[in-house]
Length: 285
Image (cartoon, rainbow, N blue to C red; front, side, top):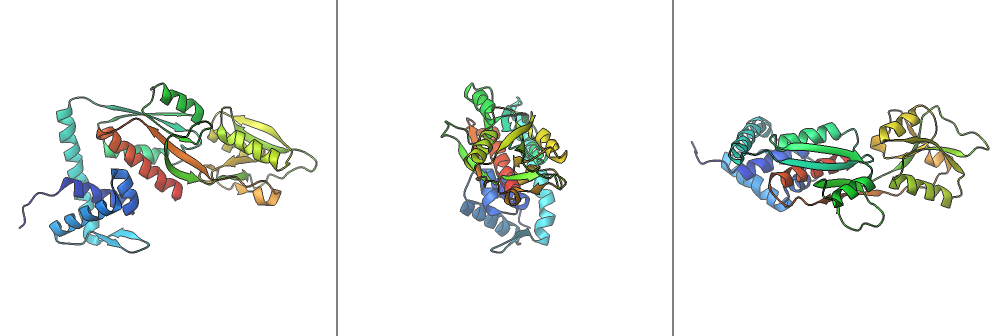
């Protein structure tokens, strides 16, 4: 029996591949390259003497032995992390601001992913507008911010670009001769400003029918049949319809989501990388 110890880095790489079903996203979560991830996996498979991952050009899935090993791999990393935390002696805090237009229904899963990455880390999440969160970031009140592209800023790391469309309830119908009723977020909101400018440029008469303090409130207004709203498809309530083509509304551009961070290393950086990779996966579906 081979008694050589396992490479912890290789085990961690295997777990990330299993979670994301993607070598690229696993590399993002760890902060390395796809080639390095592949090398770590090969080293682990050579050590164990079996194939853990079945990989095709379109799919990544675990082999039967990979599924069995995953349970023990997670147990190993949990014990490893507890051992490091016991020596550290202090619990670190990571404060992250997430734009309300970005924090969608995946937020509980993202928080669970961060906690699984480092159960000893105290995670603080603040939800707000992109503008307000960037001000908090600049005042060093938060460690990182995941926000929409904001006017006047050219910094930040691009995470993903997200589609926006015009949504309304299935029962809602425009009234002839009346302005288009639009539900929006309260100021400051970049999506609100963009939507208004595009409607004006297209010559579409519109009026603000509802102002919500969060995306959930705007989605509720859509469900209630008050009017239309510019939303990401992953944010819309069940049954809402894309009414843009039917009404001849202007196309909404893909909007960038950026990460602003001053976290440079250590456990907090690893958690932030895992959050970023998980968010990319959620947005891309």
